Length: 259
Ligand code: KIV
Image (cartoon, rainbow, N blue to C red):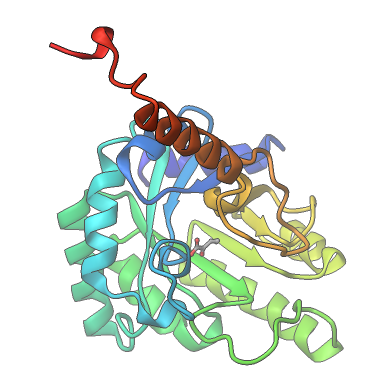
């Protein structure tokens, strides 16, 4: 098992929280990498950067190009890339596309959305030495209709717990739990031996992930679990406004900024 992955698993054993964030480009990834254990090139880039209404519109070449850029900034964290929708429909297709992503981007592994339905695909990838991260709860690639957290009904609870065990057995090295009710997240985290990484799934997970642009206040996200740690939107606005007024009154460029 690659050492960065073993380190992540050891963190769970040592009860040391795992810090994860998304990044879609080099300059940002460079800063994120300093304080994270794992950097995810998420297919959330579809909505965040491209204004798509669904992550289903993200394709392989978009993921590859952004990941190549992120690779240049990530030195110490584990770098994981989301497999986009329709790129892992069967074992052969999944293996071919995962190999392509890993070869072209030099990432450390991939993330696939889904539980028991994709267990054979995951097993096939793991048997072929592809490090795989799971993702259950809200899985945006298959999400339809209104947003609702998962683990409300007994049936849902049973299925999610079962899915987490199936994914562990299939060989994933960690599982993202997205918007799963807190008692269930706790139970899953205590039941499986691999790390759980929560997003909207309470403090009981072994680690946490957020979409960086949400945390920076660059998106207009009003999602309950998002905590804004900065207000980059207004920082950008203020800087651009100041540049505009400097240009208009002739104070930029000054002699200092001229050859
Ligand atoms: O696409 C993404 O960014 C993700 C994380 C938010 C978990 O899947």
